Length: 224
View (tube, one colour):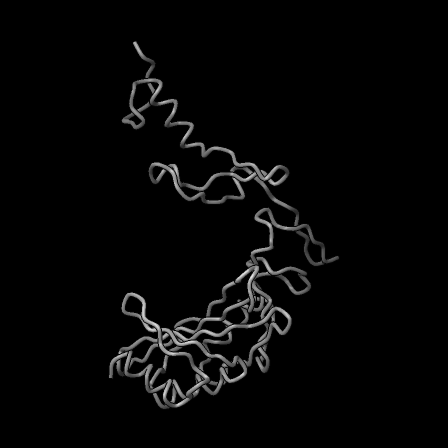
């Protein structure tokens, strides 16, 4: 069966619990309209549709919109070699989903990372601890309202953090520009929210002033 046929079979089994499959560049995505049924949907995908490999689970912060978060499951079947994507929305107020660790053991790590970085909990997870940050850390670094420089925090006798606009960072990428170098990350200054020019852009200007071209080769030589 093709990925589209598998998606249609999935949709036919669950009816209004799934939105119609959407396609982008040959990949098909289905949306679970009831996040509480995510385990049932995944169990059918594994046991009836042959999706025996959970490739990844990721999360998206839809900051300023509802639902606040989207959790995305990437599924693959070694038998039919097809890939499908399942996503579902999670409100900021609830911020919780059922675990799927009983179906794929790889979900243990993926769900812990989402909990650690985004703050979405997974009910029934056998070991829902932080995986990158330390226990007791009060923030979720991948949320869009988390500042680029970080936030100061302190867990006595465990660890601490400080805001860190260190050399050349934190970085942001600005859309537009005349070429790829002009679109490279710039330094955002936290106090003023202004942007400093990328050091490579400054070097390009120096080079152009030196010998009339905005590129090398070799070291800058003074005009004669």
